[in-house]
Amino acid sequence: MKNFIWTHPSVKAIETNEDPIQSITSKARKLVYEAIEKGWSGPPFNLFNLGELLNIHIRPNQRVLDARTIPIQNNRVLIEYNPYCPQARIRYSIAHEIAHTLFPDYRNSVRERKSKSAMHKDDWQLEMLCNIGAAEILMPIGSFPELNNEKLGIDHLLELHDKFAVSCEALLLRVVKVTSEPCFVFCCSKREDIDKPKYYNLDYCVSSRTMPLEFNTGMKLPETSIVGECLAVGFTAKGNECWLHNQDIHIECVGLAPYPFHKYPRVVGIGTLPKKEKKRTYEIKFLKGDATCPRGEKNKIIAFIINDKGRSWGAGFAREVQKKWPLTLDEFKHWVDYNRSEFKLGNVFTSRLEGDISTFNMICQRGYGESAKPRIRYEALENCLYKLSEEAKSKNATVHMPRIGCGQAGGNWLIIKELIENNLCAKGIEVFVYDLPKRGNNRKASQAVLFK
Image (tube, rainbow, N blue to C red; front, side, top):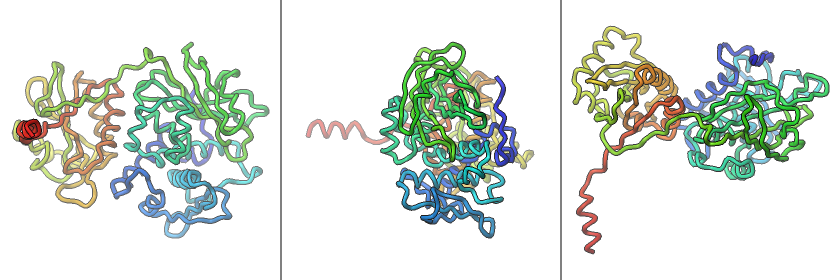
């Protein structure tokens, strides 16, 4: 199946070989990482605080339809929004405008809804990508972990989007990234660059980590698809269909506001597969024990975080590794001495310990010592975890670690856990996370309660 051809100038300006959907998702994720490292937190995630961290001024203007992005002096950006819109709409509109700044040419002009006569036929491409970026900003990685166990029916998800005060589209994109069920979220529309459009086309499709099928951007849906029943905003439809490879899928969808000045509503929804079709993946296995004593019969990789400044391991889990295997620190120091340019965030160092055990040192902590803000760098961690997945696959190894990044690095475990699931578990790699048993005189305490 041919890949979709992107034609909008702003999309074509993205200097990367990645698919634009993946590129904007990565850029939005990077923006979120940097904001969290500067202290942005939630839920709720305050978009006005985010604007301050990004040096973006946000102010109300009742003459604006929804919101707009205006380049101003000193390479800064002003976002104006209509304060009389519903609160959820304001949040979505601001996030959408922040997503506009992810494009290289955003300073070239004011970004706002144009008159229909001034609209280009491919402007929907830019709008759609900004919607995806907005979803990453409204419901960032590591947020709302409770959505993992939510029902995947459209009626229940519509209730949740009111509860969390986010758009339905943003909620669906968050759910698909945390669920362990085989499913996918999609957005489709009737393209208005042709007369009397007959088919709905996939604008994008995002799969869960257990979803075995892939759907391409631009794919035509069956002419009789139930998505055509969502003729107005809020209309829902449900049914079983075959979109690809004679595979039955259950579709539940809802009509949303059309792209600016388009006639037909967009339709977003969720597709699910029978559980027997679930792609083989693993969940993190949490154990009580010591990660320096990894369990199992396979080759084992002990993974942990180190900083980008110190040549010695004087604290945290790295110190325990050094105490048990002193030679591995000597190897590390030798590597740093002869590879100084490689000793930087996002890079890794590996060392064989004994038998079937090796270490995997991930450089994703900026400096060391006390700090008012977290020292972990999530983008660097994501890069390291990708390299760890390649190492584990090449060695047919299991991965063992403590709760990395949550000690001296000051990281958020919910973010780190999701990164591990996406980069390791989703690729069929077994991951074991060890927590040391709590110390204390638990026996005496329980006896005191009993005899009391």
